[in-house]
Image (cartoon, rainbow, N blue to C red; front, top):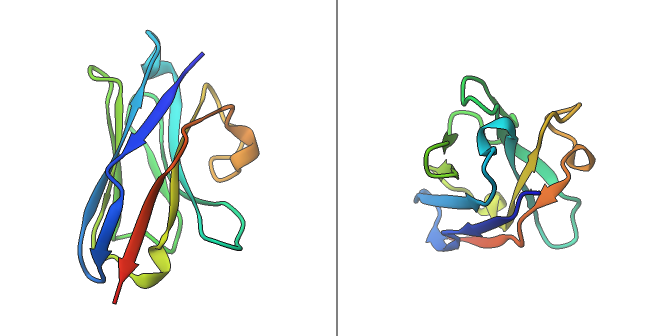
Length: 124
């Protein structure tokens, strides 16, 4: 079992930065792949980024590549999403997700554990 709690969301102007954090419970945190998804009002939840248990490999959606960075600190049971050069279209609720071995990194149905989400609003 893994419990996830996100934090760090807020209101930011376009072009600004935010760092989201996800605190995870569990003694085998390093065994879990971690990911961030987001969902805007009226839209389906979409993949943002993922990182392997060791942190050795990261995957990004094309829409955030070069602007967002996912990282993890296994000693602290934490995952982060550094978001730079934010755009209006990045406005969404952001969710942290975990699974031992997701079949497809970008598929939300392949992650069994989810946080409650944190809202990011980008203004012009």
